[in-house]
Length: 297
Image (tube, rainbow, N blue to C red; front, side, top):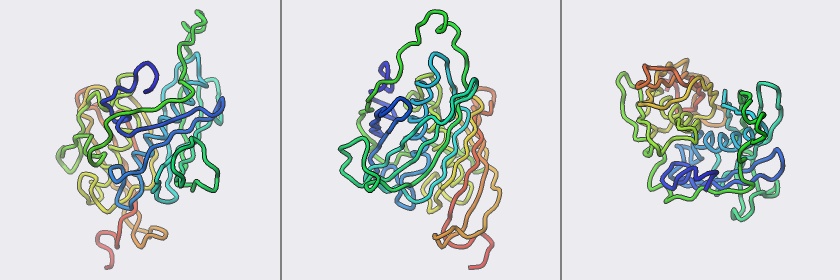
């Protein structure tokens, strides 16, 4: 389990079965098993799930580095270089800059080819699959400074143990059509972070599904594969439902080594129950099979 009983047993992070370890003062490793329930159309772990793993690593590093100050995630960028097929997938994060008002963490995502028995494996047993960076805004914790009480930090080693996913991870979001081809997600305790807002990786996963929907697929069950995310976190999503607004920027251009074409979209996520407040803006890059719509066969 995580710090102070978070997450609960009935939670997405618990069902993903994340295991993590701080291996140095500024290095954290987190791992999940690559199963069909978290895979996209290419057989690799969905980019939204990888963003969830990266968000956990980055948040752990940022909490440790920012103490006694508080921090919030400002942005997350993730770019795939190959499908992450496992059998395990591991994110390795480290702090690269700690300034007065911002903190930057970078994370590599790797396929782990061993049996998963070690938190850190030899380079020959891990293949790079993606690269990510995260920026955190630092807010001074004046009360903690005065009292000298920084509060508990992340444990050195932790695991999230739940029942496991019984089906595709997308199904746990309980998505529905929101009109005009958009996607709606109710807010529930199953998806919340320790601050009572929708977990940042879940917002990335929702954006992935919304982009695929806008590019011609169904609710995440389509041959289109999202390969790039640039996520800007503007406000927390707490009330719900969280509803997407997607604008397709273009479809065309060959996807390198895929035989398909690249597409790009911008997804805005609004908290409809909070007066339509804009919470997140995500630039999405994807690869779809075959020629673009309206293109030559």
